[in-house]
Length: 457
Image (tube, rainbow, N blue to C red):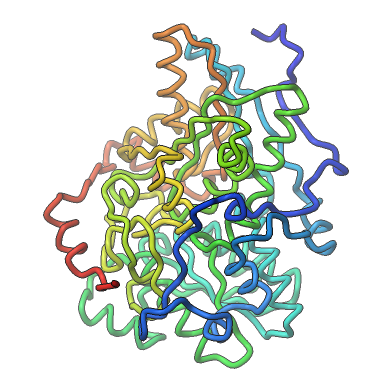
């Protein structure tokens, strides 16, 4: 197997790094549905969004036609600290599985924040600094986005206020301390710091929190604090745009050795990693230039793609954000306290939701114990301890490789390894001690949340 001339790790030269982000929406004939103002049901305007987001990020958010946005030189210079990231041939995994499949993973964990989130965090901090703001507010689930944003804000001298999902705040104290090391303030959400947090705690005093709750608090803090804006680590079009560097680099590395993937797999929570990884490949698919099988993988405990509905819904639990048309479980849905904190969002990116609705990609959900079984196997074979979120993609990549073993097909599989799991040892401990649960919401539970979806004509 190692007689091939393809190296173990494919690195791009610094000069081969993308100089522009790719806007996937420009190649979509049917565009994602616009954000709606919940007060009047009309599409949100740039002026209405200006009190929440940075001006240039709003322009990126609303632009459905410009295919490429030039990456500012200051951001490219920052990227050079950890990009291009390697595309790795999983030779050892292939050998252990005994599969004819060729498996590659794009490794985004080789930076201090430990994940792909830094790709957008530095961009959003840059535009906030350029606008002359004092600081930004945000939410974080597993803590990887909060870590990345605190690092980016430290670089540009901005204040950073992070609302961290309560169960993750308690499960991942070291991730919390990294944020504090970079100067961020970190508050478990829901909290008594905001009016929406107080309301949620009054109704659900024992809640473990959710990304929807934390988003509500971060937005409220931003709009009530002079000189601050809110930034988000996933879901939004602007974030998928920044994360396209993942897919652009992946495609450039594959093209360098004339490799064409058959299957592309990414974990899916809000959509930042998946959308970034698949962007240029989906672009080719939309333009009719090539075809790929694209698979989104989500937790069975928070199955927005596979068991949600395609409808307009609030982006947050407190119902203070705009309405987005997406696959959703209902903004009031609070998932069980599983260990894939970054995948505990009730909805999905509007862009990815539209692509999924058109049948251009697949989705599957996996149980938590199956995910950690794959994570442990991968760590033992490939030598990287993966984040719980990334391990969803690993699980399905292994499953697809084993199908190739059964059929004898030599398919090429690419998946995103979005981060490392070195701050997730509580989760690994529970898995090893047999204390990890596989809670899956019932149809009745999901129906109750769907019944509360806003009525949009």
